[in-house]
Amino acid sequence: MAWYAYCIGEKQAFPELARHRKPVPMESTLGVSGNQVFLYPACDLAVIVSEHNPAETLNQKSGVDHARVIADCFQHSTVLPFRFGTVFNDDESLRKSIRSNQRQFLGNIDKLRGKTEMHLKIFVDDCCAKEIERQLPAESVGRGYLSNLRENATRTRERQTRARAVSFQMHRLFLPLDEEVSCRLTESGKMVLDVAHLIERKHVERYQNKFATTSVMMRECQMQLSGPWPPYHFVHRLTRGAHAQSAASAPVAQPAAAPSVQMPEPALA
Image (cartoon, rainbow, N blue to C red; front, top):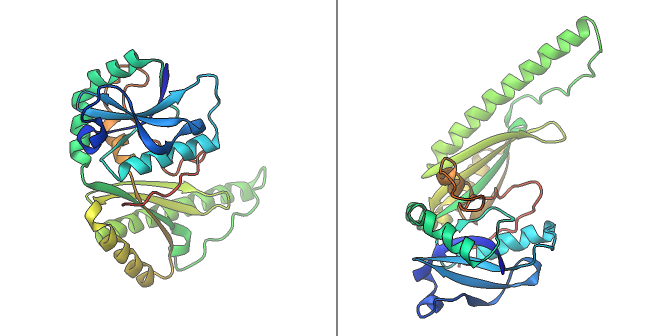
């Protein structure tokens, strides 16, 4: 039997596993393709899985279901999310993977215990005093073309400098335990700063209040907040350099803002 994998949690966080050595169904929880979700005991860990037919195609809804199951488990335990689409061919391959990586999994759970992830999305171009001029149509040859290249390079440097300054300011204001920052350009040409902050779960309300205060203070910036989330980005950081025993051995985070999957926003219990 093939298993579709969602995440790994602490076995002790799921009392229903105390007297069982076989997979135990999670009541009222359905996963990808509407399949029943199970708690699969493995050493001191609980692997959250559902039965899987390899012939079935994973789609947009599958990604939403994947994230929803992880969010549900996050209410009960620290979790290490598997990358979307991770499948174990049978019981033996699942058990072997967990045994081979047990020390790493337990260490990562210990590092992330009691922590959650918050997301800030900041439109950098809206934070400047002057609106950046729209790009002029480039001429194919001649002095105008070279001048346009220089102007584009200048705009890019200005945006990068502004993004670094805003990122530093966000770090100074929110003081996260850890952070992941990336920049990207939208189709309209605006630069967006994506910031993932790792914080204590008990401080979520304090963080939200800080965001409200910061939004008022920086009215010229367009900012969006989402979370709390399972610590997707920071699981990825912990496993990034780890040696995988098999193609599906290590739980690597699927970024919450992955363009192919619109993730639902989880909430803490």
